[in-house]
Length: 374
Image (cartoon, rainbow, N blue to C red; front, side):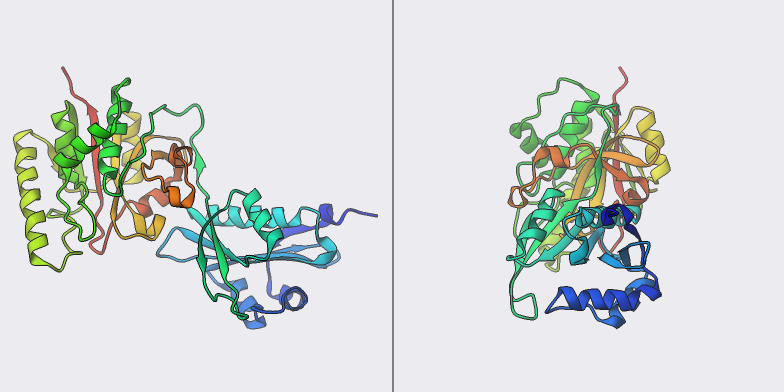
């Protein structure tokens, strides 16, 4: 008897697959079934990827549906099913891997999914593929059952041949700029001792952002000034003039504080001869700078990465033909993240351009750092 696992082929669905998909859906699920109309839409939609596993004889062995949103870099594994005749042959693993590949090909950074708490087999499958539980959605399914939410980084890591830069995880929610600058300093000056004291010293010098519920973060000029005070050459690239990050504040007093702080930093930047180039860095320009030995601190969108709305800094230090290698200092213990998972991330260059932008004003900012010439 031929092995059905070896016969099945995973491919994009076509409209002719829809009747078999509907039959499989009805056989597998008592609630929350995908309708015929939805399957047809998934086949042709730009915001979905419907993959089917089929035998040479045309049997529908399984499927996976991945959904995408233009405004984020988060894909969603919406549904997955394996026909009973093809169970326990590794097809579920292959469908998960194929779904992840389709998301990576689209430049997505994360895959998220929902699963019933009593679906132990599915939970085990996802955990084996590196998914971590990060939340619970109450009353999610038609029968009022809750859903567990799982997430996985789809980003690969830099190869061992890449430049070695020490990693430092920010110790607060608001010191990403300071942590990124410390890592940049350690890249340019091997042996630098990174510490919480240095993290807070830099933050106090570089911050000008007024937050309602937490201390402020670092703005581009603040990071550049803090770096220059420590003997580094700094050039600021922005696509617009300041003040920065003030649009999100309705209170005039908060905006006034931020503007005054940034004016002070701008004056010091001018005194120190820090160049401010009102032109954003493209992916190609960033690659050339990295090749020249520079380290670049880049503002990124936490909405695309974490569904948050705060400015966030990462440090870019190397690249290959397709990826920019970065350290992201934000490590969230509540999501069971560990420093290794946020170090040496290999972000596709095309995606990097998409996430290196912040807020409604579409601010692009980067600080290019080098060792000062003697």
